[in-house]
Amino acid sequence: MSLSKKSKFLIGLVLIIAVSAYAGYKYAYAPHTAITDMEVAFEGTAIEFLEKIKENPESWTQGEKVIKLVGVITATDEKGISLNESIYFQLAEGTSTSELFENQKLKIMGRIIGYDDLMEELKLDKAIVIQK
Image (cartoon, one colour):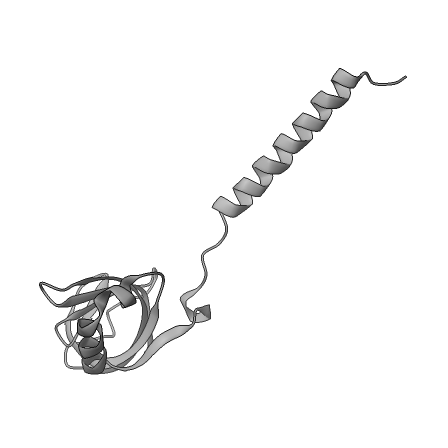
């Protein structure tokens, strides 16, 4: 029993669609890169970085850039902390601020999501506390 040309064409078309759909699904729903696996673009104090970003904010807000900063907590809320009154870190999901308090010095790592040059405020997300 042989398949006709039309049947072979339909089977081939269905296979191509199925493989394309699977590849598209895998691409669209690929797991996000963990912040700890990303390259650190800057490591230093919060004050040093604020001066650096004021010089050229566009270069720091393009793409995914991760920074590690040492600074003093000036405010806390349920979802994040502020360092040196100008840097807001939204903490990674599942991270609590209950052990963090104002005027505490800490080292924290986060991904830059934006800089407001009018208010001179830097915002980061996926933040994790490295050292208290």
